[in-house]
Image (cartoon, one colour):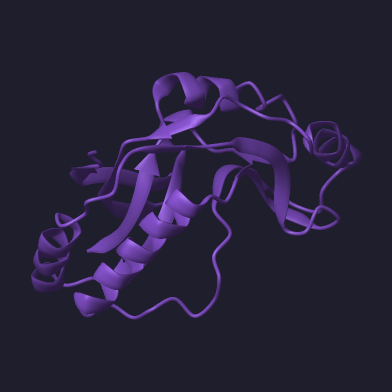
Length: 178
């Protein structure tokens, strides 16, 4: 199974971020229902390791927290955009949850990440060499900001790839509590 661990966004925030998705021919916009913040991409995982991971993730004792969602950016860079995304501001609580998730993945037998991951919400992909319209969009929304995200849960997701794109299914939600 192809798995990842992420925070799903509330409907209102998805709509707010979705207002950025203008008619720009060179961008294939991500469907709003798939907006999320990935903590860990686990890749292909056996059923046995998935069950171990589920048990380990249940031990989370972190309190809910909030993070800022702001700034439209691009990978690999604003000058050569391939993936358009909205940033997630770093915070001590977010870092703590990231460390918890990574430690539980490693203890479940998954390989650790090889590099630092930039927390983001993918909103679109460029189809080809970006046009002036794409550059104008990025220039206009570089300093955009949305409502704060109240983080009170995260989940383990199954991802299935097809020619129409990825389908994400929540396998289990883990609530943060005081």
